[in-house]
Image 1 (tube, one colour):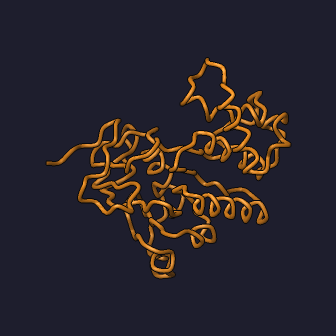
Image 2 (cartoon, one colour):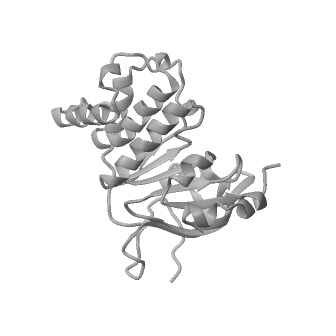
Length: 247
C-alpha cells in the first residue's frame, strides 16, 4: 500500500535497513506556482553527517525544510526512525539582526517546543540551555545582543538553540556560509563532534570543503537527485560539471 506524505511523517517500515534515520521516496515539494523538488528518493544514515550539496536554487533548503517539517511536500513518502522530532537550525540571515534578543534568550527558544511559548523555563530547561551553550563555547556571550556577535559566534548560538531541543537529528541550513575560514573550520569540527556523540547531522551547503568532510552526500541539481553516496563517489569533477545551474 502506498502512503502519501502528510504533516505527520510515518515511522520507518519494518523492511527498511536499521541504520536509516530518515527515508523518503518520490518526494515532490515547492511553493504555490513554483515546484522545486521532483521525485526525490534517498535515505539519511543515522549517527552520520550527510551534506545536501548543489548550487543555489537546486532545492537544498527546500528539502531541508521538508525534513524539518516546516515545508509540506506535495506528494511522496517520508519516514523517520523512532526518536525525537528533528531540530532545525535556519540560515543566519533568517534571524534578524535587529531583534532585541540576547544570545541566551536565543538559545532558550530551543526549549519552546518542549515547554511552550509562554510558560517559564524550569530548572531542567535552564540546565539544558547551560549545557548547550557550554558545548558550543558561548557561555560567556549570554548577555550579549544577537546583533552584536560576529558571524561565527552567532552561528554557534543558533546551533546551541538546536542542541537545546535535545533531538538526535539536527538539520542545518548553510551553517558555514559567510564565515571566515577559521570560523568555518570550527563549526565543521563541532558538527563532527556532535556526530561522534550520537547525533545525526544533515547540513545543506554549497561549500564543497565542508561537504567533503561529511560521511555521505546527496547532490541536487534543479530539484532532482543527481547523486548520492560518499563524498568521494558523489563529488567528482564529472558530476559537479554536469549539475544544472539555476536560471
